[in-house]
Amino acid sequence: MAERFRGFLPVVIDVETAGFNAKTDALLEVSAATLTMDDEGILDIDQLYEYHVQPFEGANLEQAALDFTGIDVNDPNRQAETEDNTLNELFRVIRKAVKRHDCNRAVMVAHNAHFDLGFINAAAQRCDIKRNPFHPFTCMDTATLSGVAFGHTVLAQACQLAGIGFSNKEAHAAAYDTRKTAELFCLIVNRWQELGGWPLR
Image (cartoon, rainbow, N blue to C red; front, side, top):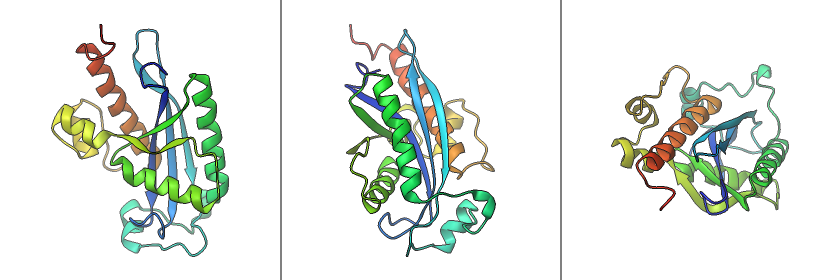
């Protein structure tokens, strides 16, 4: 894994939020998928993690965003944790995965990745977390990759074109979107290897 991605461990992330502004709008859900690679260089999902997050103090909650995701921030069954607890637990499991694969740090994989990276970085800054395992600005964007591979940048359409089942009813929940993004990323990386793109010989 370290050799394949130049010392980086790809970790797939999806966030659900209460708006588009990472500085002012609440982070509500985070899900992560760590990846693994077999001896033939085939990438696959390793572990999936899901977290529900309490809005930080003073966070903006755009009703249109809540309507879109269907998240009820007052639902006690969410069992939401603070940003601080959520990120420290998420970063702990990511650092363990980075170490397990002999990598130097994680690189975020996401669909429209700079959106997710922005929210994770903003939350880490609010929580004064110094050891963010993700590269601060480099990421791998499956919207871009699927545009190249399948001619479509929308996650649902790209998955369908790739032969990956996708349910619009289950979409826009962090755990579901993370799994589908991870399946799409693995398929693209593995297909590239099958075509002779890696390893270079």
